[in-house]
Amino acid sequence: MPVQHKGFRRYTLHEYIAWLETFVGQVGFTGVHVHGTWKPTIADYRAASDKERLIQSMWRFHVGTRKFNDIAQHATIDPDGYVWEGRSLLLPPASATGFNDVDQDGRHPFMFEMIGNFDIGAEQLRPPQLDSAVGLTKAILDRWRLPAAAIKFHREMQPSKTCPGSAIDKSWFVGLVTSNEKGKLSEKDANRIITTWLQPAWGTAKTKEEKDEIHRLANELRKASGQRIS
Ligand SMILES: [Zn+2]
Image (tube, rainbow, N blue to C red):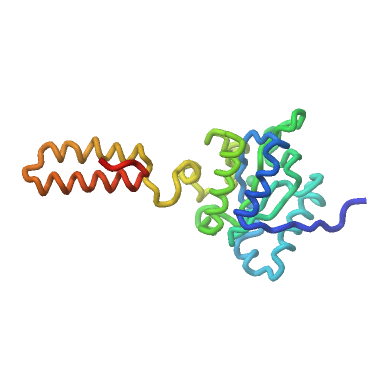
């Protein structure tokens, strides 16, 4: 007899990552599969008085109509940035046919859904939901030592789909995942600005004030990128 009801726990991103870390030795993730639900939409989520029921309705659709053995995804990110548990992390996801990996050696991709319709002209992926999607992707790549190339959008695996949404640019998303902390300048960029622009300007500066100012700006860049000043 099929299960009639399943409960889903809700985590903050921080709590979810702490829980995820307990799986590092238990499961080998081969990549991160990024999806958008399309339906339920963000508007559906906002209108729902009981948010867990929305997750349960997806589970019911996946199990009842699609005949999956559980909800398809490992995690669902809601518009408030909360991360809901999905199927067991130890099981391969129902992400895209041919890309779920045969789970012979306990290795498979991690799959998450973001609630919303992110096609052009529809809804928008914004913080805090965006921050959780980026943070979760980053956590999987870090903990499982995966390259950025391991991030896959559903539409890359199934070109008839726009999923996670035609308004979400892949390189923009990957850029957010691979960039440093918000507001932090990378050492590489700082040094590039110093050598390409500031040093030549220092060389041609006419007055000591000008030279001192350029020197000060170079040190501000060094500080902002966590380097020692000179
Ligand atoms: Zn999808």
